[in-house]
Length: 144
Image 1 (spheres, rainbow, N blue to C red):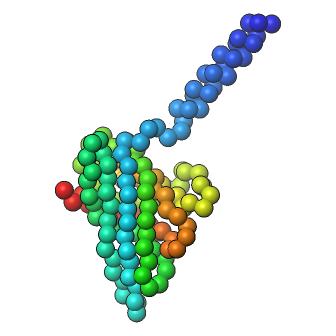
Image 2: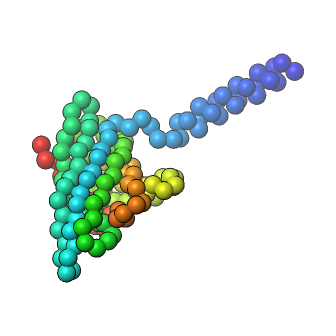
Image 3: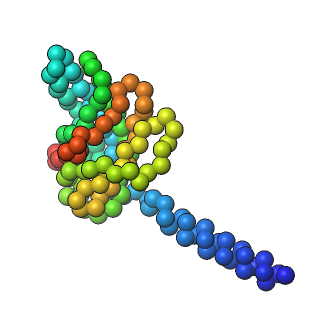
């Protein structure tokens, strides 16, 4: 009887470890994005950008392809984690959206991936403007 309980405990422990390996790994970096968009009379403009914390340094980047659904002046704020980032140069590029992340309640979640395999999970609040990634993807350019 005791050996059955030990076997079950061992199998349960192995299954738990296997499931932990399927979740997100520890993030390699974190990002913050803040952009203000102005839309008047069919014309739009934006300013802002993002910051990437990678290692002990913070790097600024510009973005293109981020859309805020709304009229007038809208502010978009998002933050998130970056995975599979081994070199700073791999962060720049075009990110396309894919849907392998769970919904997180009132928070809008966007999973993005670039051609170098870097993945980004962005979260933004659903209040105010709705964050949308353009069909061409989110283009990230490092500024430093």
